[in-house]
Length: 232
Length: 117
Picture 1 (cartoon, rainbow over the protein chains, first blue to last red):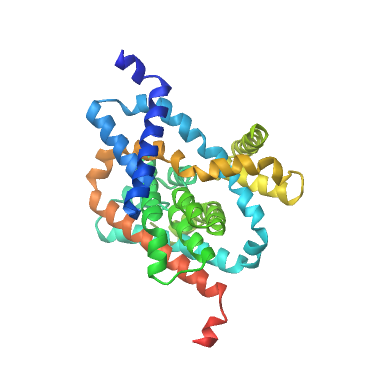
Picture 2: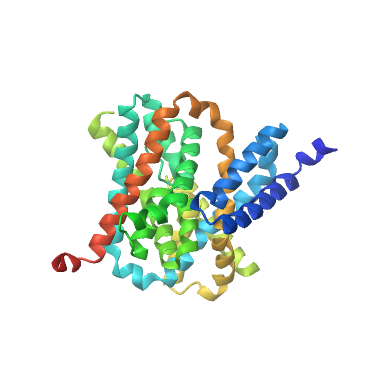
């Protein structure tokens, strides 16, 4: 009976929702950024699946239903952008330059560090679009010759890290403006970071959403150019 | 609510359609965001139709990433094979990007502060 239930979408949906609600509850109780509900939920569900021997593809039947809602959510990012359009338009220069610099910094720091530490060419290329939102990162990596599933995993981990540490890290290095914080976390940690920024401040969330799209675009065009120049 | 969700999905659909038709590197949902922004700016779409649905989705956006994150478990072996360059590059680079973008954007946002200091 159990094995029949596990393969229905109900299992993945219910498991995700229950774990997420408990993780949110824990987050409010503990108050530490490391108790981030997304991170705690991911780790808990992986451990539960491994522990009970349930296959990922069985979980994904339900998981994919929840994941589907990410698509319209990205489209919905246009709403806060429109609502705050005047404040954003006034700051178009810092926004565009900030994202452009972040896009370059991401490519150079990720690839450079992996190269220094003796990473293989495939690993280095797979790391190149790590701050870009998953669907764009995958299409980039397929073009430049990295390992797409590895990139997908790195992108999600980057997102969690940025969401967990981003706002606190920005405050510590003296970045306090809502626009600069939103840009920093949105450029570094794409959608997961953006979701976190909406909890902190709406304007921050709006610019973080803008950074997802623009960083994705810039990285898409920058990477092939940089590779041609460096001969990598 | 239903009207807002329908509109969002329609814009995503248009984005997907254009992305596939023109073989663009930009995914349909990001293109859909751009199209919706265009629709709002040109008053073709009234923000009131969308506010409720957009609010609901954005407030819970973090939840939608959980299944994507669980997918990491499938690639455990791949990550374990070269864990050192992967983890160091991923972690340090994330902080580098936040520092570069945050510091630069804040400096450009408030240029008058340079004169005060």
